[in-house]
Length: 147
Image (cartoon, rainbow, N blue to C red; front, side, top):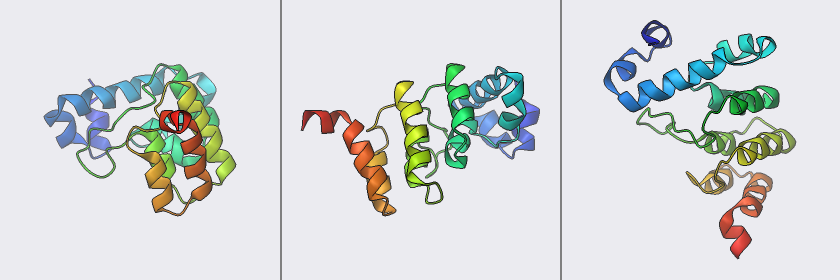
């Protein structure tokens, strides 16, 4: 469906070889196309996976708009590498964003149904020394609510 765009982004092998990747790639592009006109260009400027990249860029408005299109907040990238993680894990790994921006994006993901445990984002935040974000995720996890 989006073969030319996948090739232009350097994903032609994955796109032609993996049905799961192709479905997720198409889903992300369709979500960008469905964005309100004012956000569409910002979405188009992002590489795949657009939701994940909007998260680590700290674009709270774009993350919320992409989630409003129905994207899975726990979406994996299906790239078969270390980056094949959920948006919340990408966010937890980020060392550039301040806590408040990370919190706002995480809240949007969680409100859309993301799991605070999927992919172990709390562990990822701890691994980069982001105790504040790890504590925040712990407070949102089902395990934290039980314990």
